Length: 203
Image 1 (cartoon, rainbow, N blue to C red):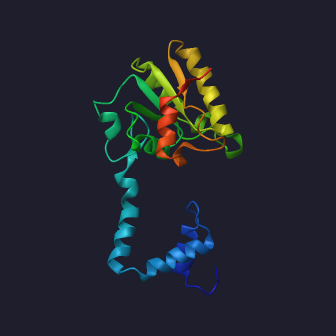
Image 2 (tube, helix red, strand yellow):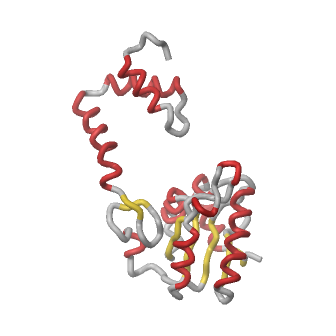
Image 3 (cartoon, rainbow, N blue to C red):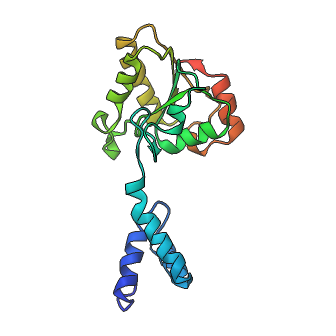
């Protein structure tokens, strides 16, 4: 950005540029658009961003973002308690649940094993998963981690771990109708529905 630009504008552009899919040029466009908003709207946006961390927390059951603990999904008594769907991130859970064809529980792993991105066991919610399975309610664990190499490696690790500690637990994974290299959160509703309906035991 030009060094003669006002310091407050430069600071905002630098912060916006850290957002996913937002480079320096698009960050500048966004900042200029904000300057054209009415003052009341920009202040409301600022207050919403400021209050985001105070208003949201992680659900102690599934690890999802929520305003109340437990979250609405975990607190829903109508949902099946014997099936647990393991997803990598919260937005993948939203994508699956939005379809309305899955009525079980969720667990968010917090990412995938990826040494290059410094994603290892310490960064994942493996202990939370094991504690949930140890409660004895879950009869089937559905691995809904995607079809990338990292997802496959993570699924294999989880399968071995679960087999060793809970040998009677059924472990399945989403059907491989999901294209190789794709992520759950980018799949359309019908692909997700078919993948869940025709899920296969993970061997």
